[in-house]
Length: 251
Image (tube, rainbow, N blue to C red; front, side, top):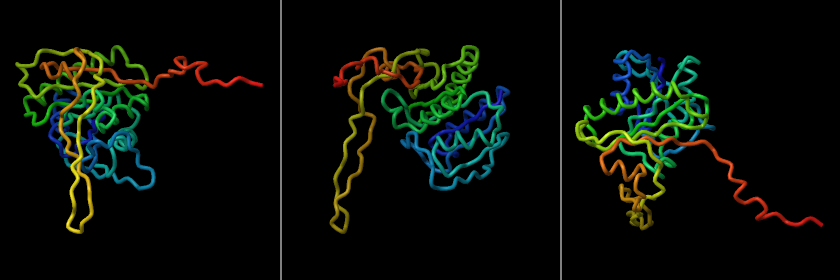
């Protein structure tokens, strides 16, 4: 199959390179189009007012391009560069988990969402920080096995798979669980400082601390040592919940 690969950590990220090599080793054709610089937490940003440059990037056995834009830009440009023969889009492997509410910030998830919006089946793939090559190869194979099954049972439009794994050796993982997303939120704080000119500024003190998560959601299960998969999307119409609540009487 012909796979389009992208990420938000940038084209030199190890997770992306391992995913590409693993996919090629399993006989897939790979077109890789990724940001030229780090684009984490760019969410679904789309470049409108600046030109995008797609520069060929040397990578053995892969047709690869570095784009000076967001992950969403890379999917759109990548589909153009790859042609209409792409069968699946894989976004990752991200260095850091994308669980629960993190997907609203994640460029990794946004790239998979954009592919789904373009009628291209897609998966976002993430792992805990500082994963080694053995962990990355193992997760790549899990993702590619899932991809084969998803192609036999296609995802609805606007829906993508979100795969996450803890930073554990393969023999310590408890298995794969399909589960709902957690609705717990990050507890990031801001530090206020003063620059040499006496002007206050703020710097986010970002960590992975979150509110307590409900049992059997992706956050809780990854913390227990499971690989998790959630299916995200599509847009839902909830008008029926408020029918009549805000209507005014005529006359």
